[in-house]
Image 1 (cartoon, rainbow, N blue to C red):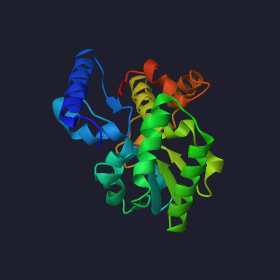
Image 2 (cartoon, rainbow, N blue to C red; image 1 turned 120 degrees about the horizontal axis):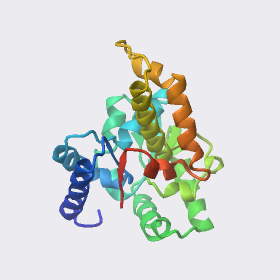
Image 3 (cartoon, rainbow, N blue to C red; image 1 turned 60 degrees about the vertical axis):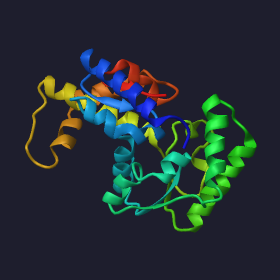
Length: 232
């Protein structure tokens, strides 16, 4: 619950409008918690905003998981702007225990946001994730862009969904899809049209080329594609 949300919404809206004027065809907000003001940004521009929670929920659904734990800031866990897309897909969301949430928030804001990596915090995150697993979580959604700095697959006994990577891959799919269409890939009218276009060799080649630009983490490619990223 940190910060002046009206002021932050104004900053992102101004940035989104500037990016639209500069020619951006789509937007991503490169921060999970800042999606609290996503509706204001969407209402202010005429180009699509690719919502990180919607992308994450789609990935969980594709993984055939029906109950997930959510590791995130207090703002994200306390609001429905993030859990809503999961509920729409009939995916149950388990949150950390109420007493654990302020500690999770503190480790994100006071440590990870500043690049501070502590083994003690990794251990605590493991305990929180294990608790959600014990309450039925089939996977854990890392709904904080910095969580991937500290947590890896072997830190939990269930799969981890890193929303930063998911959003970037979703953006890459969009760019590859558009590029393939512009270069002659056939466009179908059936429900599987998007998958057909993404399977086209032109789309696959572009996606591979974009991923090759980021040997460390896929989010680095956002500066190289015509999809503007808003982040704080």
